[in-house]
Figure 1: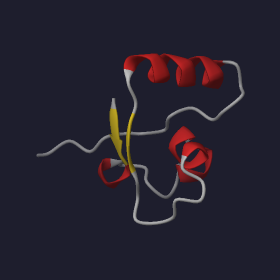
Figure 2: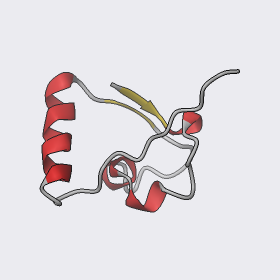
Figure 3: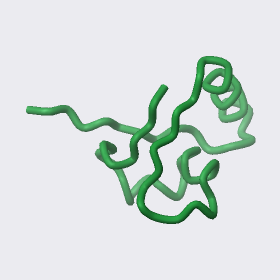
Figure 4: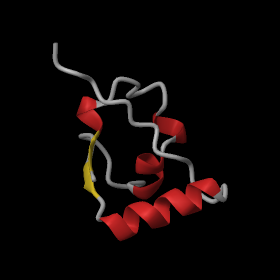
Length: 64
């Protein structure tokens, strides 16, 4: 999974409660591009489901 914050429809409004912000604290602007493999995606999903980290809030913009 590739997460590009520049393509997120809710960027800014949902950043504070998004796992990408949690994972990239201290990296600073510009918005990071994060690539997660299947195992990491499953682990982050499980951690979010358990309330240990915020969920992914990405809502990708669609060209059109």
